[in-house]
Amino acid sequence: MEYRDYWEDLDLQEFDVEEFLRGEQQSEQDRLEQELQRIEDLLSEREEIHSESVEELESKLDWYIEQLEDLYRGFGGGQKEEKENLKTKIEDFYSDLRREKRNQWRDKIELEMELREVEHALGEIEESDLFKLLQ
Image 1: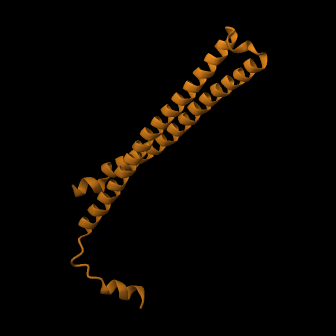
Image 2: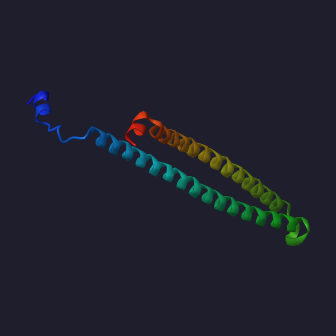
Image 3: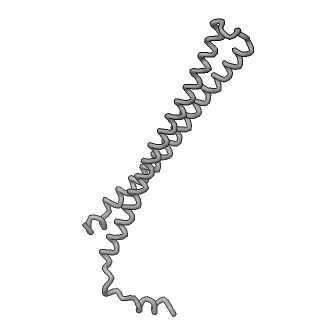
């Protein structure tokens, strides 16, 4: 069967183009709004994870700083090797905190870029001539 045979078999008398286009546009708008919500949820979730990670790192950092301060005050023997180990751990935690903040910033920027793209696409749908004609 050729293409034109299929075309002839279609019953276009009952097909409402306007209704079809309105439905397609609404489906696209719904999909974009769901995507927008998904990205906003991810931003919120990532912020929460970041806060928990930073809080945990800062707590451990505080503990190591207290241990080092105790060594310098004379508690715990004041061994030089132990002081150096604590200083190294403290430096590592500062490095981990910087890395966590940097990763969170990058992640946030990427998600915000996605968010803007979806908002832009949603705005295009809402501003399109077809959308205005169909309302």
